[in-house]
Image (cartoon, rainbow, N blue to C red; front, side, top):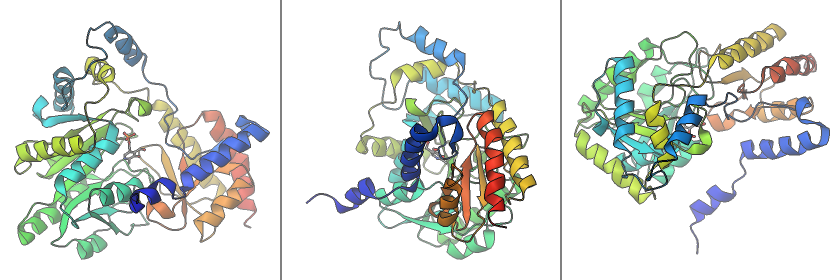
Length: 390
Ligand SMILES: Cc1ncc(COP(=O)(O)O)c(C=O)c1O
């Protein structure tokens, strides 16, 4: 008998996959340029030239294709620590960093390291859908705090009702997928105060896991660096979005010295990664990123796209909280059932993702990491779509 839970994960209908398959078919039928596909968070901006050059330069190393140590290459870990210290005034050392296969493995290893059977992890709607899978697969239970629909900042009233003595960790993601909202400094300070108070009350640590693949993709607003606000913070980072390298599978976990029992937490993350099949992150990419850890792709185009699609849609009458980062817009559906609205949008060859799996009903996610032309050419279709509801 095979594992039923895993079978379900491998065969369960995924709405994003369904839309993706439909989009492929439709593009082959009527032409790529007239299908407006806003479904996937695949960066549209190329990786910087310097990364490609660094990959080529490092290819001549004798160990280019060898294993690195499981925790990652020391030079890479040093470059990352130096870059963070320069930008955020912190004092991390290379020993605080564990290099992973992107944010997904950073999150799974961290959750596996922290959770004992049945312990709870709290997150805030709307949230990245995989948190449910990642948490449950590591033996935990994901508890979702309902959204604050006015701002998509944290709904503290509901959070206070849900946190309890079985809460082991809290996951935040800012800039956020799918809302694009950046949690303000006020939000982070308030969250830290509640966590400090609850740690005292329950007499155990509550870890704050901050999932930050979009940290550098913010449009003129400050993204608070969370380790400065709360002691038991663990950062999960990825180069998938900031360096446009999602297929290369590289990121890290940062465990600051301030975390209680930080050496053992770090060791448990290394052990969890090992148990999950981690050997080392791709070596060539580690060597290349070590040479340019402070770089990002040329992210300006995302802000131009944000302005174009946010202004375009709100001028037409769509409702949406203005996103300050990432490359997503979370738009109110024009009927209560987001799935019905998604199907209606398909009639205009607009592909968006209904919001139910993100923990909120009645919205759709628009990923605007697409070409400018796609946005410009989609607006007349969005106009017809809204008119069809009048
Ligand atoms: C919020 C969030 N966390 C984690 C991930 C996983 O990122 P990675 O490709 O680095 O595994 C994604 C990917 O889209 C994401 O949006």
